[in-house]
Amino acid sequence: MKEAEDCFLKVKKDYLKFLKKEKIINKSKITNINNLKKNYIPISFWIEKKYKEKGKTLFLGLSGGQGSGKTTITGILKIILNKFFKRNVRVASIDHFYKTLNERNIMSKQIHPLFKTRGVPGTHDIRLVKFFFNNMKKNKFKEFKIPKFDKSTDDRMKNKYWSKISKKPEIVILEGWCVGAKPQSNSLIKKPINILEKKEDRRLIWRKQVNEKLKKEYKKVFSMIDHLIFLKVPSFDMVFKWRLLQETKLKKRSHLNKKIMTYNQIKRFIMFYQRITLQMLKDLSKSASVVMLLKKNHEVKKILFR
Image 1 (cartoon, rainbow, N blue to C red):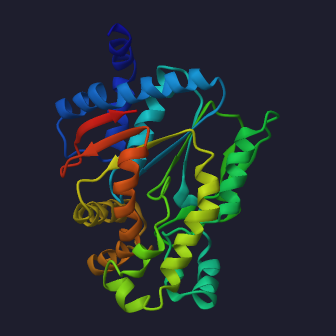
Image 2 (image 1 turned 30 degrees about the vertical axis):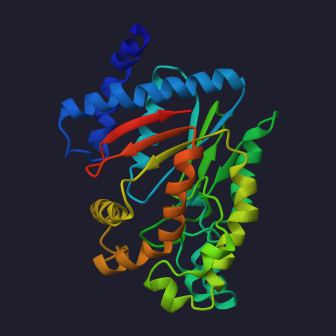
């Protein structure tokens, strides 16, 4: 297809430059080029088609297990949609909408100690996520700001560092590990899925509260998304390995005085995500508009369009 080849020639330079910046240097140039041609360009054409069908701001969700490459993939899609299709794209991470450390400390005292750890539904400021979506939907667009979260300090950044959105985007991508997640039945909630749940949530208070958040607040927010792109990890074991790589990358980029998680801390940390991640593998494999099946080496095995 000539149009796809034109797209490749137009975005190739910026794409390779972006991968270098992101330190994606463990793959050969040929592999990276193949990924652009076989995976990212076809998805971008699919997005453009959906945008034209809707005729106004298109809202996409992109989710997948920790370390699956969500941020990198959204960055690549933004380059293609912007450079070739000339679309104004805004990417936002649900991670930036985490509640402050102080707010989570209060939750840990009032509801359950496990809410001090960011990640699960209930630890995001849904009011701000709604504010983000609603402002994007307004016909009379007005400039506004969205928060930024620093994972290395485990807290929201000061207002002066927040991202400014001064122009209404044509395509919005909300990326995050739990975007599009669905609640579980009460019978599934009862059985602990790991040591963390078994020993630290014996009365089921934490996981029941998380599930309730998914049933109500998060369901309303996720219903604002037009289409979902799901990165399907090969297994939950790979989430730990990939999250470990992610932390190593964060360490290289951060200042020495910032907190970086150790091996054991990461092992415990991903237990918070395990229940919902496994449920998403079942649910979103069937319901997502686009499913990217990933191999153990992060390569895309297959893409399913619906």
